[in-house]
Image 1 (cartoon, one colour):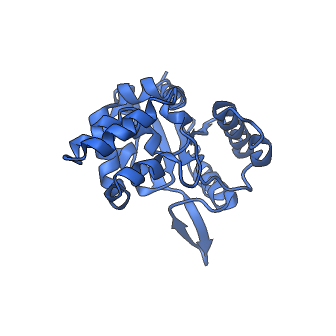
Image 2: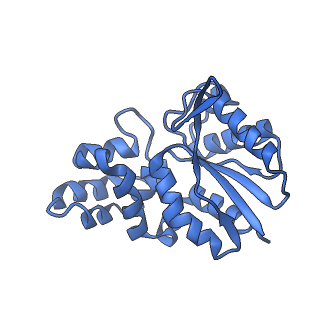
Length: 226
């Protein structure tokens, strides 16, 4: 049996993976348990989880988990945002010089995988954050925010300016979640539940069609059992 252990950055991603990806991957013979949150800090033997400030706690937590489970049919992966990325991450300075986001994230993922150093580890860094997946079909925000036609229409128009929602930048005021929050402020307080629910309405096939990097990762996970 092929098993998959996932480490995700926050509770929104945790809910998204549990609701959409776990049942999806089961259809491919890949069985994933509830994803666990990234290690933020470790104090007096206690791991505090959720978010990333520094690379070392994330790395050490992954290495410990990998060491604990030596089954060759158990794989490990991550879902962490490029937005707000820690500066001490392997190749971070070099990657910042790459203007193409796809080249930048590919370099970081290679460096991440090399640093972990286990064939069962699949590095994945989300371009540029989870909310990019929701902008694959921004009109679906209307399923949860009725009578907000004008703000949602502005989201749609904005997304049409980019070739892919993964290319929406990661500026402090212009990252995907910031753009959504500007026109639908109430989303930010409810994103843990509303975000995955909107993703469910959009559907995995549409998300992967619009988000090439996400699709590459999901395809790798689907093929683990074979």
